[in-house]
Image (cartoon, rainbow over all chains, first blue to last red):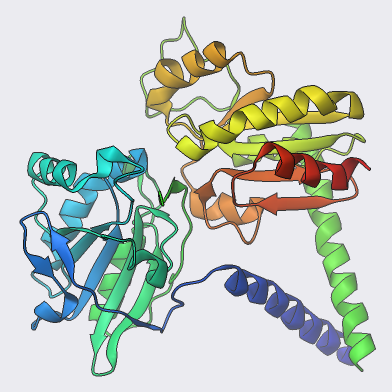
Length: 205
Length: 185
């Protein structure tokens, strides 16, 4: 009977392994622990921004977002709040609009400037011109967060997914995925939830 | 040894499968409709479509009545969803004689139900059954619909009692017909 139980356990592990195998093979882009690429993209203030510009940073919240997606719009205030909370702790928000403005005129560079001014974005809001950065990260929708930790080996991906578990209302959030991940990272503790899913707008190519 | 392991994996899969099935039948009986608490609703003018959380939607994802179900996840704000909807409607019109049902699961936000969703469905004269999925705990229900779904829409589930496939992508008319034919032939 004991042998049977052990076989059952092995079978279960094998089965689960098969599932997670499917999951990772379906997605391209970064997995947790990968080194994320740096970039040089144009900010709404006209400057070029790279991760390597931030000498003092301990990490980054790279957030793929845009003007036009209703989910992104719902999260704008919460993205500002993340920057307010974590920039001073060494983890600034870097927002990137991955959409092709010729397919989505509402996400043009000019409209990005307007939106950043209206909402008082405190973080860089970059255009992924030519759409070369988001595919490397494996962003599939907006908003899509990648938490990076700066290490001697490069910027290591620590969390991928949603900002929290309730897009409709910040006051009804039970789990602040991103805040929990950044707090754990800064405290050198294990990040409990490293990947989450959410409905979002597909990136327009 | 390998064969034994394989058999065990299969039997575990089967057990899990059965568990899911009996559960879904249970929820079918307690068929739940939820009103959204966070949004001002006019009680005299409720939205015309059923509003479900995941548990409420689930019975529609596990029907065992010999029909083939096309479950399309969409929203009025999702441009590629809107672009593919006419193909779904056309395929449904042509294939409903073959026991095909079309369910259009709207992920529109509560503020859009009266202002955008209702006028859109009316204007386009949609024939598929429109239901609203209003469940903010997306990280919990997305993998329950399909383990590989990252959350992008459009996304479509096609199933009948023998076969089940999930697609996180858009469809053309021909592509949808080809996929559906794998279920009804």
